[in-house]
Length: 229
Image 1 (cartoon, rainbow, N blue to C red):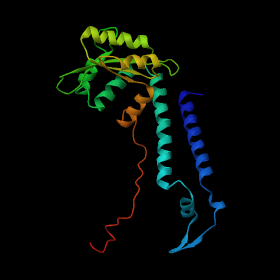
Image 2: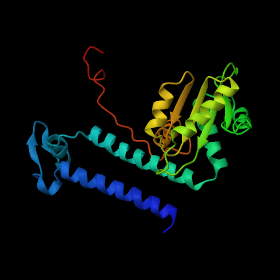
Image 3: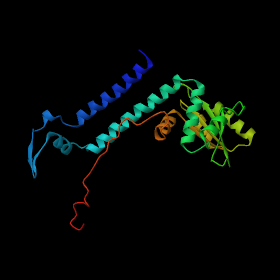
Image 4: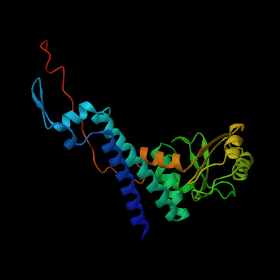
């Protein structure tokens, strides 16, 4: 089975589990009275389900969106791990530019991966004027291989040697507890971005993803029905 087939299979399993949970929370039309009288005629089975369930239709939409987003984030990390280190650097460039760092995309791309320092993978401007710089370290690790304290210490040592005060360490995996604890006591400002946070930011800023469907929910306009207007 190919990687794409594995991805589709995993997403199908997640959605199937969600549908099963929804069926357990909401009675099916066959279990409900076909119709019952209301103040304005009869209520349909769908209306009865929404009324008798503790989950509102809006909450069902939110839950489905959360499940789809979770599957998308997992797919992003899987696809990144399949690519080359150069591609991973481009992902970071695209994300930083989308977040407002690095000035133009061309300037950010020229700086990233051009530092020449063993503990630094790249440098980006913090703002468009280049008043301050952020130093980047990127590790494309598998999920089961966390970034440990020694890697963070090496990165911080490079920052100290360059007289830098700000750094971002990005990985597709996770950070060990000692690594996280080490960063908390630093004088330098070092931000750790693990795989979960990386995929979250990519979705939020539209890097490597695109909109597939937009659902518009409309409600009554109470002002329209007000006699004062």
